[in-house]
Amino acid sequence: MPSASPAKHSANKDTAKKKAKENTKMKCPFCGHLETQVVETRMSEDGDSIRRRRQCGACEKRYTTYERPDVSFPNIVKKDGRRIEYKRDKLLESIGLALPKRPVSTEQVDNAIERIEEKLLSLGQREVPSTRIGELVMRELKKLDKVAYIRFASVYRSFEDIDDFKSLVDEVRK
Ligand SMILES: [Zn+2]
Image (cartoon, rainbow, N blue to C red; front, side):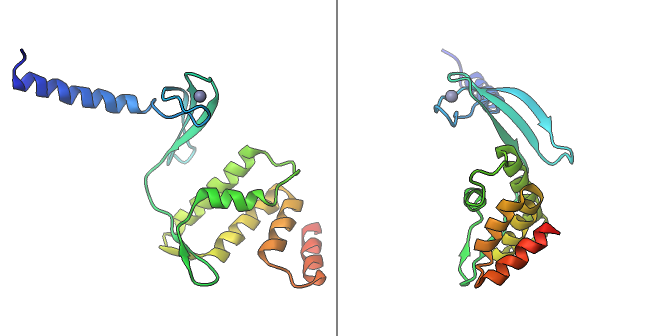
């Protein structure tokens, strides 16, 4: 029977081991399998995040995870004054509404969201108005796809009449 101290020692070692292994343990978003393998690890250009390509041990699908310092996003202040938490899914959803049948890849959208998030974090504020995010989205969409940009902007700016819309189209045509 082992004495108390070696048992304690090995428990510590187990914890350390488990920690090192957690990097590769992540639930597969496709099938829920718990073992995924990291197939590629890359540092972002500016060195502030690590990107890992992972492959599920069961269904073999690949996906990407990002590791970055845990700094929190500012809360979003809606037009009616309500404060809501920033959620990437919500942002993705609202951008997605402008994208049906447009030649914009998932990767382009992900990159756009990355840039928007970087901007939000770099503001260093605890709250930002939702209009600020709307502008950031429009800036990205304008670069990606003019039709998506017009779709988003027309909803976002809730145009009152056709002249507003026309001036936006003219602006994009320039
Ligand atoms: Zn899987």
